[in-house]
Image 1 (spheres, helix red, strand yellow):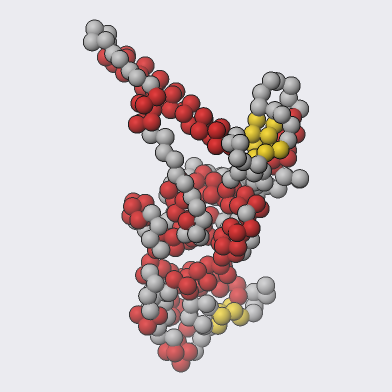
Image 2: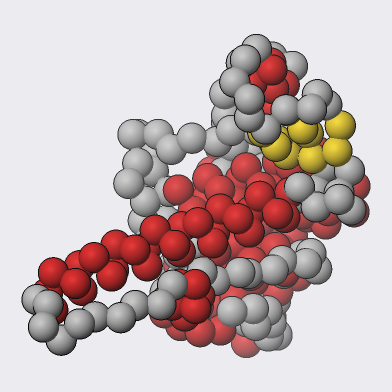
Length: 285
């Protein structure tokens, strides 16, 4: 794109240099004084014509007459400005590489691989220490885009690619505005864009559900662990020592419950599988 050319802002319809379009559009979400800052590129009469300029990202779906962005305007802008995320592309695919490695092993074991996924890793220069939740969303999205045509049509406005973390943060905020995961939104103050806030399973499910995709959350908490293992402590034995042993055993059992669930989920006879006997490719998401 020629940096000297002009583009039209999807929010205020003002002509803006193409090189400044992303900054200008993002400024609508944060800076109420944007129209005054834009006087360099537009005339005073043009500014008056768009006095209803939207400048509040968290205003919800309200009228442009109130100076707030409509939901469809936010989505339209985000679709146009979102950036494709970079990842290390493995020739023939990451799963094919793993499959070849596992098939070369001679041990008497069985492995199950989920087909088609790209690996998005945290980078020291971008998200080291806080971006794992976003990277998980990116990897899951890469599978859905490759394997589920119905998901490809709706994910990220039908863009067909996995957006970067900043774009995903905007999509999550839109999901919150639509009413998904209200408690989680409140916990994170309804804002994650540009921040290093940790996210997890509930944020991932909220984002996917906002695109009308089914997302199931399974929680492996203390109750599940306690139901697996029973603990009896003799009153004559040192309580501190036994508490440590009990906690260790509960954690061990909880880990096994998690592993068993994942294994049973992907080895379900109803799922499509192919490959050698000890290396199975499962098409289940």
